[in-house]
Amino acid sequence: MDNNKTFSLTLSSRMMLTLVLTALPILGGGAYYGITLYNKMLSVINKFDANKVVMLEEQLNDQRERYVELMQTNIRLQEKASEAIALAREAKAVSSGTSREVEAALSSIRSEVKSQIDGVNDKMKALQKATTNPLGR
Image 1 (tube, rainbow, N blue to C red):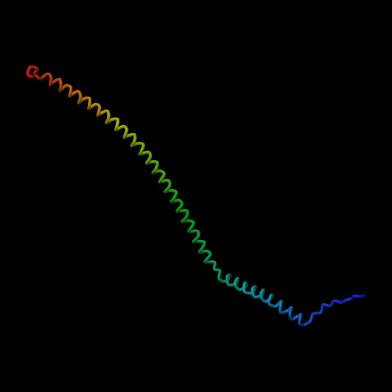
Image 2 (image 1 turned 135 degrees about the vertical axis):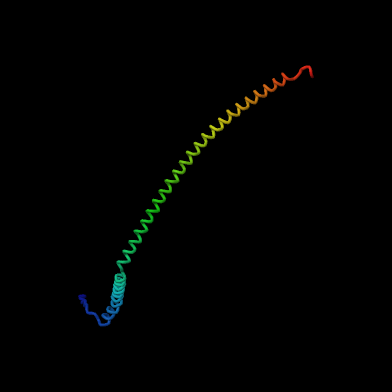
C-alpha cells in the first residue's frame, strides 16, 4: 500500500483570523507598555532641573561641613575633658601630700605642746611641794 499523503501549508481564513486575533493583543500590549514607558521617561526627563541638583549638592556640602565642625568640636571637648581629668588627679595627689604634711606637723606640735605641759605640771608640783609646810599637816 502506498500511503502518499501530501502536506499542505495553506491556512484557512478562520485559522488566519485566529492567529491575527491571538497575536494582536500580545503585540498591542507590548506596544502600549512601550509607549507608556517612553512617555514616563520623557516626563521624568522634562522634570529634571539642573538647578535642583546644584542646590542639593550645596546642601549636602553644607551638611558635610557641619558634620566636620561637630566632629572637631567633639574632639576639642574630649581633649579638654582629658586635661581636666589629669588636672583633677594632680590636684588630688598634691592635696593628699599636703594633708599628710599638715598631719605630721600637727602631730609634732601636739607632742611638743604635751611635753611642755607635762614639764610645766611637774614644775608646778615641785613648786607646790616646796611651798607647802610639811609640819602644817
